Length: 185
Image 1 (cartoon, rainbow, N blue to C red):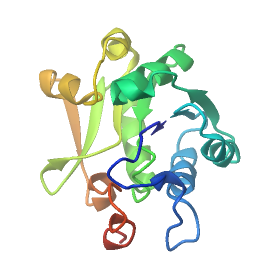
Image 2: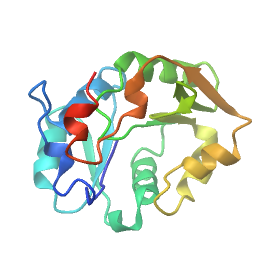
Image 3: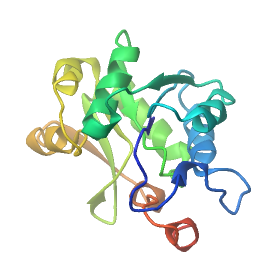
């Protein structure tokens, strides 16, 4: 779970903001992910003790990305390195608390059934989280910049399994304070 962003557009730490369910953004995302993935690695930025404690309360392994300022790709690399023996990875974003566990479970199942790269699609738009089998490990470790794995998904679209869903949570992230209220379903 990627949680090392700087929240610049939000103006403060968006991941510790409380939603209408009385849980934090990161806590809600973590809870949903833990329902599907027994082993979760969260990647945070240095010095974020409150977020680290919040995530550890969900029995999540926390890894500090010492190069978080280099963008999302550096967090993906840190997460892959911390779980390098895994058979695959479901890369979720901590600022997307409305993704349904059922959607994540379906993506995980597609990977277990042999798909090498998976992404959810709602309303003809690709969303998150995205999943990769072990065969993509070297490519994931080469990622750079703030686009995460977007270019890898685009450049390998012929192998991307698109899971169609009505889960609008795959499209809803939190970038601005108004997103905390306007996007909840």
